[in-house]
Image 1: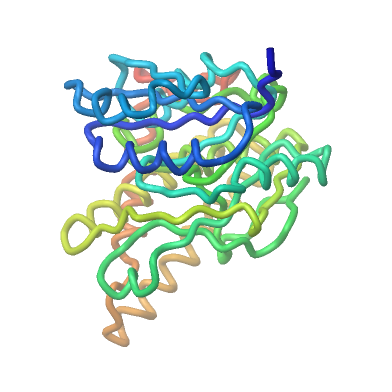
Image 2 (image 1 turned 180 degrees about the vertical axis):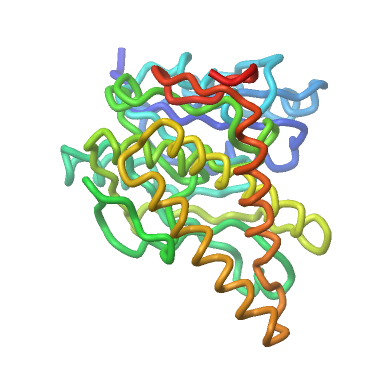
Length: 305
């Protein structure tokens, strides 16, 4: 029996038209040393039927879940995963045929790396029409210090983590991320926890995915505000946890994005970015209605702890 070296977790809900092509792109990677775990939170069987064409591929494992939320779905996948390295992408992403190999190479080149964030690109001209999350690596490695607020942080659409690191810092916060109480921040939260624990993060531009999830108009505004709310809640949580430099991190994010937003507003540049700032402030305020589990470093939906 071939040893599974990488488990890929793909969370999806009500997007069979996206999940099918994403699965196809992952399974186009050669070799049988990886597994693909699809965690489907859909209310119907449309996604399961869309993936039936790939059912004969023994690398594919389909998991139907009654849970809700991106982070919860990823945690379900983590529990099902068998490999020492667990990779994540989103159903509206497409990976290259050497994506798995490049993830392995990035970890091999940096044995101390706990998390690898890869490049996330949008189709050419996409930002002229709306908004989509992307990530262009700025610096190769971070350890014992947080990335500054004025550079992009890695995102969950293209990330991989060692299982032993999850054992040290915990899994995704179920109340952060798409479909949860706060609409984002789950990847930033995991990065903060890793660096606070002294672990190394590698930003590998050679590990790339194409992100097709473009939002336009009111949908784009809602998405950006949700991301801001999640980031605000994430940073506020680490202040409450007493994470070293957590207060400075929160202050730098709010100050930078507020300054940028006001600069854009007075010059009538759209979008201003103030929606993200408003989301951050709302996330900070709302977060105090939740308790914090100090052992697991996650929010709990109850009275304050």
